[in-house]
Length: 166
Length: 310
Image (cartoon, rainbow over all chains, first blue to last red; front, side):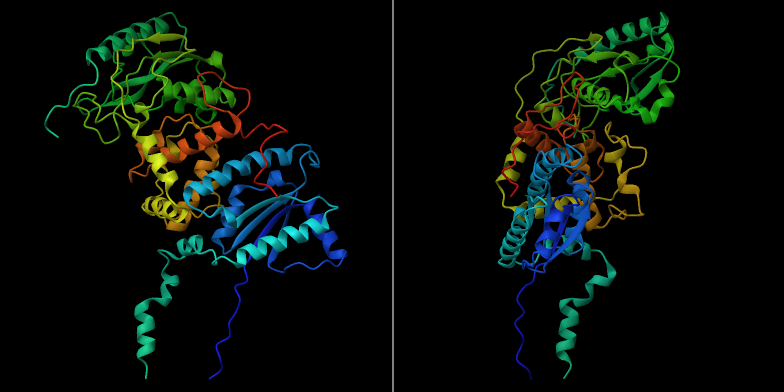
């Protein structure tokens, strides 16, 4: 018998970033050889204004423990006003998610410019640390499994039958 | 339910409105101002009403206004249903709540104000979805949205028909429910909403009756790439209802047609109302009876709150 390994919970984070600021900022963090947690998966968009709230939902449904949305600082948008529109939309969306019962600690918004490699590292590190103190996001994943024939494979009855094997 | 409930107002008030309505509609049709009137006629079952489009003065005599006139007729005026407007100007019967939707459609460029003659109806309230239409309108069977109505006498209309009687104060049960939900913890709210959403059969009646769901192809019907799962399973249902509420945020006029059309009795208007309340708090926006240049989510202010952004 080997001792049971204690794995620390490694949260999966999906980061939706704009190509002009945060993506370049994350790139700068890389080229400057700054270290940050590898929990984050970066998805590049033309602008934060292109990030539909549906993408955030979809990320949670498909197993993200946290979602980070990041773009240009207000006034710096490559398309003039994309991030201003996004700011309103996400402000509203946060309230909606909260009302439906999603923990808002799982959703983070930030402004990271192309010159702020350090801030990117800081944002990602802090977000990862705070998610590590929480349980894995199970709400949406549990829904994905409901009324789905292939997901009910670990029922208590099955476990019992396995345990009964001498 | 056999016992008669106490009527909220004198039922003759609707007969007066109906008479005024028929006269106004007949006049508009005779003098050729409009090609047709979008209104209500009596339904097949006693006391019920259904939407109809009438185009002659004789047919105008069949128009009615009663507490059964729940439908929001502005639904028939979106650009996606343009075929009915092709023959000329239309007159449309609107209650206050419908007028807000119509104003929203004008704001969103679905129709022009001068293409319609708005027949505003002074409305004491309509029946809740499940109410027996043969009973008089009472404090028990009035729709939830009518309890807190602030637009019983629609403003900015071409003709105002009927008069509003004195109404006893009604308890705003929806606001109480909203406050109760807000006081719960997030996991409790998740349980509440998913209890409702998991019953959803995805008939999409909420989408069909919504005047603002006028997209010719709904995002939720696309499957390459798929945005929202189409089958009525809990995961897709929750996503659908979140997306629906989000797409209506800052646009919804609060006619609550989605809720009354829902066969599974999901309290959809609570979501709409919550979003309306948040957008009012955040950006001071309220849907009104006049067309507005921009909605809260199609405009911005450089000084908008960003305390939630790192």
